[in-house]
Length: 91
Image (cartoon, rainbow, N blue to C red; front, side):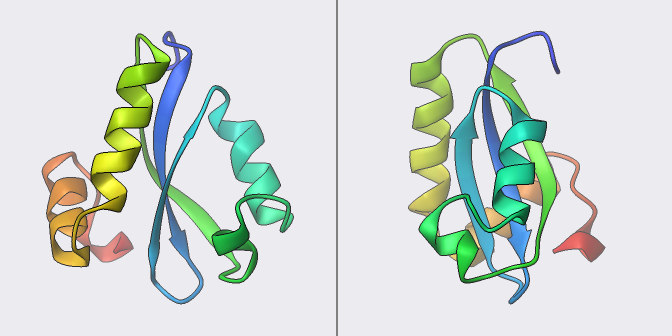
C-alpha cells in the first residue's frame, strides 16, 4: 500500500464518529490529528485512531474517495469499511 503517494484514510474519533481525509503521508497526518493540529473536526473529537487507509495513483482519485465517503450515511461508511477488511469491533 505504501507505494502510491496519495491516500484516503479514516479515523475513529473519541466519540466513535468516523472522519475521512486525504493526505500524501498517512503517518505524519495521523500525528498531526493526534496532536490536535489536524482538521477542525478532529481537534474537537480527540482522541483519534487510524482504522483504515488506501492508496491511489493520483490526487484526484484520493480526493474523490474522500468526498464520496464523507457524503455517505454512517451505516454506509461502516459497511464500506467492513467490506474493505476493517474489523467490525474497531467501529
